Image 1: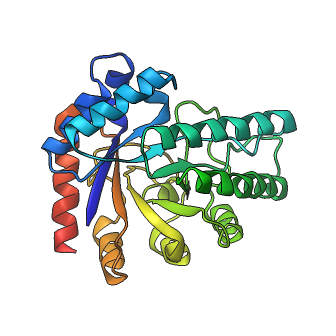
Image 2: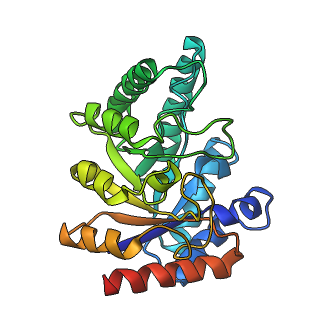
Image 3: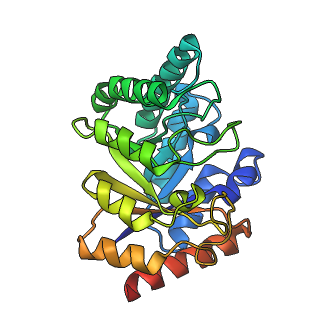
Length: 274
């Protein structure tokens, strides 16, 4: 079992300069993780000098950067904005490649009130399929997620409802796009069907966002292992399938570094017992 961590709790510290990406990588290595993840919003720019320094820092620490996250909005009602979002994603694919990541987490888009279900699915699938060969060119694996809502968005993810997520996933099966399955977001959508949904897309899953929520029908981040997500059952299922992808902790307990340590310890122990 391979583990990495995207610590949303530490994003503010990284963004305001209290914690560097190099220091975050070193911290992840020190607590026994196999890799670390970041959001692309944490990178200051894409100038050659800056990117070279980030790559050198990561190499110096000796722990790989496995996944970076971004959130394209392909369900925007304005076609010109959807085209902008695609161009932003092309930039993000190139940036993920430049810093040596393997996976780039992508989204369908926001649940804009003006966007109906049929159009939203059609637009999301169309743009994601268009992005797939570009990602292949740069040796980046796009992983589409059953997402909920980042702080940068006004609305929830259009494909947070499981039936929409499953339809989009089905229409991406014949592409190189894989799935990053988030353990919390089916519950966030108001359903207790996490294992059922996971089973339907398992053959497409390369990465797991090990995430938590405390409330059915709401994104309510709490320390991993203290909410509603049935981790024992999920890990038992993954073990029964001989899952050999990545467990990427999406840690959002807002307890600082100690919270990250506790999350890693919980996941390791729960995985071993499963």
